[in-house]
Image (cartoon, rainbow, N blue to C red; front, side):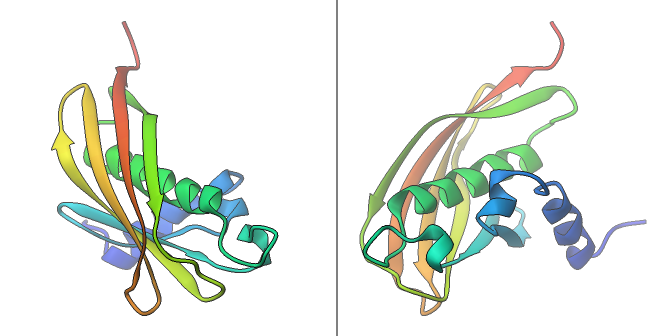
Length: 141
């Protein structure tokens, strides 16, 4: 029996319980054969002192969605997935609503992966652009 998209999303979000993703209220909201999208509410939990979305929270959203994408699209029965480098350029401030991070693969190798992550607001404005490198490490030697 194949799970519906809603059931897959529900199961994916259950994995986030007790993690930074839950703390920041990051939720996986969509996926396809070559992408994964998550969203995070912009509120006082993720503000910098002057009331705008904190770049660190944006980077945490980007790393979460990128690592999750690697986890889903690679064979995690045999491998651990770990983020090894992230870069983020923040282009626009956000005060409220949601930000959405969409991760797509630029490279999906056996050992290393490179993901492009675009963060947008509710109106589709580009907020940040991130690149995430992940590595697949064998679970047994």
